Image (spheres, one colour):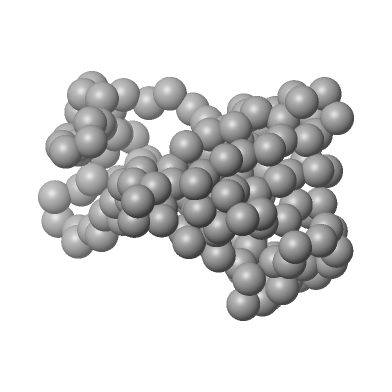
Length: 150
């Protein structure tokens, strides 16, 4: 998945040199065709996130039910959430408590980091809880990935 696009997940082994990333090592492959990733002549930054609930960070996935509802238990109250549908073309979303992600599903300030748009007001129908978060109005029967930080 690319952070600068709304595209769904695509399998591409060359990016990881045909090697599945693990919790301690990842490999990079060579660029192919018009792709400019992993060129030896360019600098890159890797953002690595670890799933560690005791440090109040969770990286995982959830699936909404047929009504677009999901309940996610983290073991902590999230303050920041990044999520995106992995099996559908949708924007990435960032919500956080400093910009209005509240304990009731109302209009929240949302960032779509894959666009150049400014913050928008959107009724995502989700809210943080004491031990995770609830999503109440997402796409039905859709897989999502997320990073939550407490």
